Length: 188
Image (cartoon, rainbow, N blue to C red; front, side, top):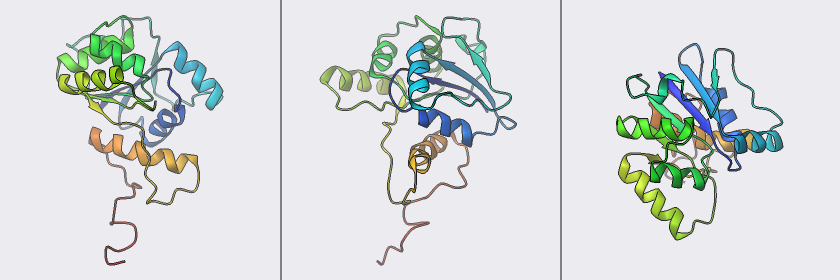
């Protein structure tokens, strides 16, 4: 698959790091774009983002990336974490930087765009922007981890969200814990 992964300034850099961990660059063409605020959050939460060999990183201000045009065929884009400000700018169609332009391209070309907001609570403006991007074709997956896999650390907890993103992309997640498939029997 040809994928675009982006992060904006919401807390939750671990989700992007874990997604990169689960994607095999040898099997996928992976492009990464980070907003300036995402870089700050990554620095505070992780120290640095570990990019696997073969991942291509693009500057947010550049519009020369292939996925900035609908003529370049890409399979999916994930913005994780996605700030509510970014959701609002996508809803408004501003396309003022590479992340927003790429999101606009994925929507207009009817390609898979997955937004993973982590912020809470939402106000009415947030909720309306979520409705707008959903109506435009985006998949909104709030970073709501599950606990039935009995995660033992932050990575395992973050993986419960990442597995769902991989499912939406159609990428196998062999270690994913599925409700009532890996856990206690339904009779309990």
